[in-house]
Length: 156
Ligand SMILES: [Zn+2]
Ligand SMILES: [Zn+2]
Ligand SMILES: [Zn+2]
Image 1 (cartoon, rainbow, N blue to C red):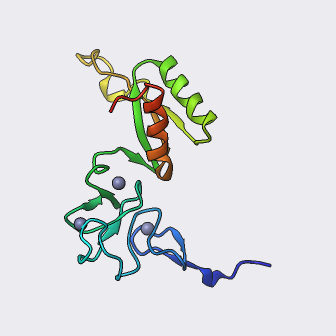
Image 2 (cartoon, rainbow, N blue to C red):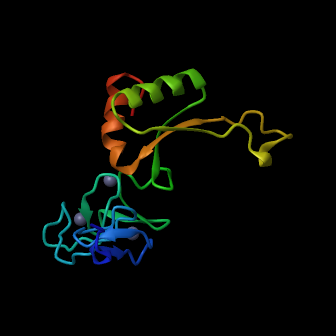
């Protein structure tokens, strides 16, 4: 049987399809239920849900960053199309080790490397650090960071 179209709604912020049963949009963190309170301030209504740690937060505890709702801890994270940078190195071997360890642990990492930026060609930019990034889907960030920390790869 085909799923009824009525089970889905379109998020007014990011225009992604969300389930009618969702309390918040997992893509951007917009909250649909006005009765949900901030996890840190129980009498303050939540304004959004951090898409990385999935906690409802008030304006004091979180904020919107380029259309995504994030907590204070995750505000500075680099996010590209739902993938979050958790680790960056200049050494490709180390990036591959981190990637395969995460895959073995059941995560869905993506190795993203910016070999040469057309803007930095020629000139005095030789010192620019070509970072190889390990990115994982939003929901996997906390657990994937834990794995890398336990392996001694991530030190923050
Ligand atoms: Zn959304
Ligand atoms: Zn968070
Ligand atoms: Zn709060």
